[in-house]
Length: 210
Image 1 (cartoon, rainbow, N blue to C red):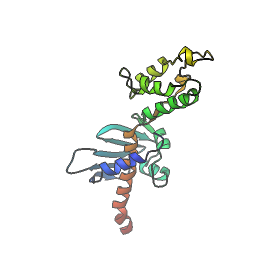
Image 2 (image 1 turned 90 degrees about the vertical axis):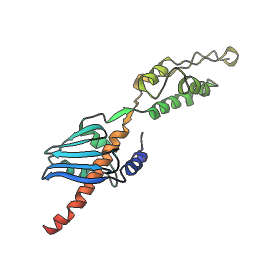
Image 3 (image 1 turned 60 degrees about the vertical axis):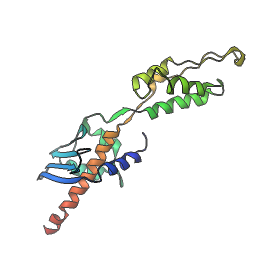
Image 4 (image 1 turned 45 degrees about the vertical axis):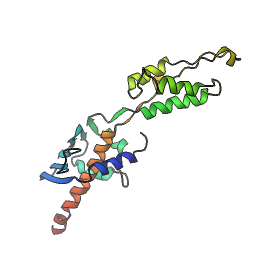
């Protein structure tokens, strides 16, 4: 992933029927729950103590640490109208913010195939058959994807190889960065941003009264 509009859309879709329940609210000590009363899917809770915010719910949990008031940290550092995945990931102390991305793997493969195709006719079709449509390797998983890339070779037939070229193989595979933000981590960031917005909206009458 490099752009994440699909995660924002998914969050909005999956949480459309959620309701906020304030379980505890005492200064920097907060406990908020968000869930659809008619479904047990995609519920989540946000808890804060001084210097820490914990997201937990229908998936992996994440712990963020930085400022005394973590709600204020998320408010100040949010990008206009959206999340701030890069900065917020730096503050995540527990939980896997990034995971293997097949999309990134495909981009690395395609970049080298595009350069090699002019010298190795038929390379792209062979890569499709031997890597992406392979009955042996499933490149949806990082170990299999790397094993396939390391072991791949493409030879030109003698009659199609007047220059006597050697085999094509992928280079610098060890340097390929195949991890991007995990979709559930991005979902959690949208959940935190939305939770704070709902919490602030619910407290506005108190601020006006004060």
